[in-house]
Image 1 (tube, rainbow, N blue to C red):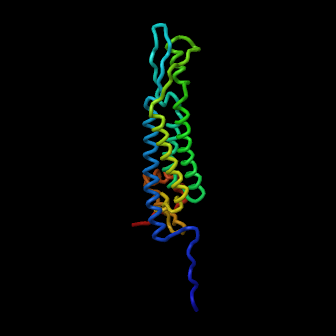
Image 2: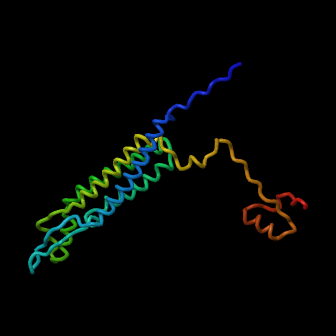
Image 3: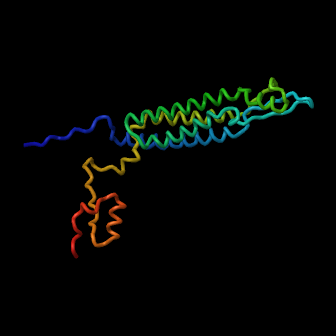
Length: 220
């Protein structure tokens, strides 16, 4: 009588080529995601826009940092970094959803940075503050390269998300190394309680046990 040969599990490519592709994509996604988040956060702390305000004493130079123009790139970079870590904590549909979130964070960072490069709202508020005129606006508006640096960081996060969507099924999960073969874990027996030892009774109560329901402790 011949035994049935088990069929390989479908949906998971265990070939050496797939394993190498998974490792390469994993390293690339980690590098791109971490670097992109760091770049976006760094760029958000730099000056993005410059201009002048008309005050009684003449033109007053103004400047605004990226965090003053818009807080979206920095916030999305942080969320993207968290999503990059969370990719390894989930599997299957959850991993796809987190990977999509990572990609969306990158795309949103790019869009917010490009739009913020030409947003005069922060400098208009500064002009109204220094001139004392609530209707004052900034003149000669210009922008630095830092908004586009933040957009580059967002693009790197986007690439990390696309790699996760494409190759995430080949990546390991954090919980995988701690899982067993599916067999139920054996319950750990509580230590015996000696009713003649008050410290044993107190320890049992601390564990949430009823020492009166346990059998007598074994005699030495």
